[in-house]
Image 1 (spheres, rainbow, N blue to C red):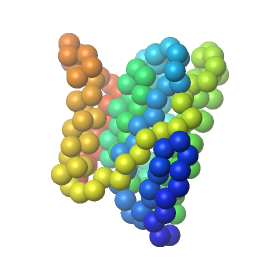
Image 2: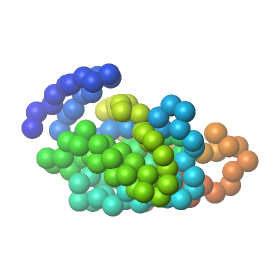
Image 3: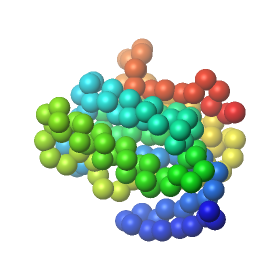
Image 4: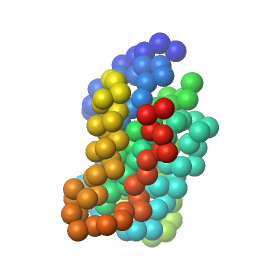
Length: 149
């Protein structure tokens, strides 16, 4: 499939075999994600890794998620993001969360080159320490063994 663009509230640009940096947030006014909710989101991201996408890095923060991935051939990024958001929203609501979980839109960017990939992966890895400087270990951050392969 050739590249294409579409627009919801934000513009989205798709290219075959591209690597993407994606961010989505909790809906405005929603309580922060609890530890078990962050774990559920992390599990969902790992679930189809290697089958539907190459997962490069992610972090599940208290109020947003960042992911770097390369969709598998034939996989549409918007379908992947919708799958994560709908599956995790349903799971969190079944566990007791009330109301809308995620904002309807998300941000995505095509990672242009190896330098930008390093910058995005480093950003993800350092995001928890930037927000909470006193933190030593953060279990909801993950980086592939060789993210630059």
